[in-house]
Image 1: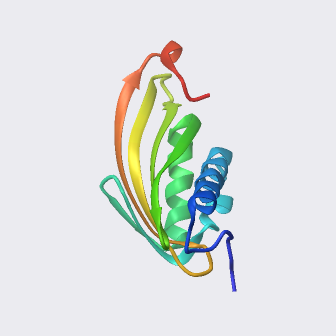
Image 2: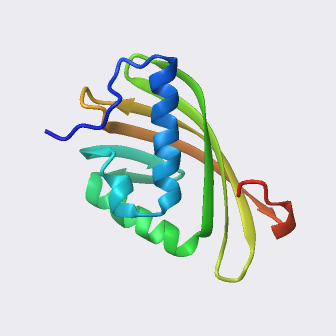
Image 3: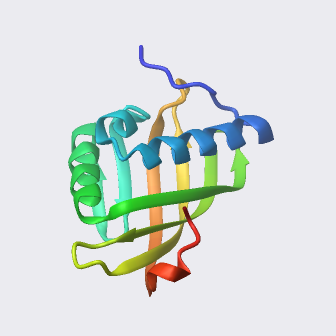
Length: 137
């Protein structure tokens, strides 16, 4: 059975650890590595997309990081309870034309008993920025 400690129910330390692990993994920009933190049948809402299952997660992340170049993410624990964690985040990237963006958002996470994320619901807004205004490095 796949496991991804720490396991729920979360306390402040384990929730903070889970958030940092997610930030570190996403900053690798490795779709295979990142996808392994989710259940096989994970359910996502990412902006206007509904993504189901680890295979769709890998495909989504591959496409994302092919478009969002020099991606850099920072996550912050917002709250936690039992097997759920809420985070706020911001990340920066540029497109193929060199236009920079900062994305802000919130995510709600639900984990199974083995510490894999079963559900991820993300609300995200993008803001065009100048390269010299970057702050997530």
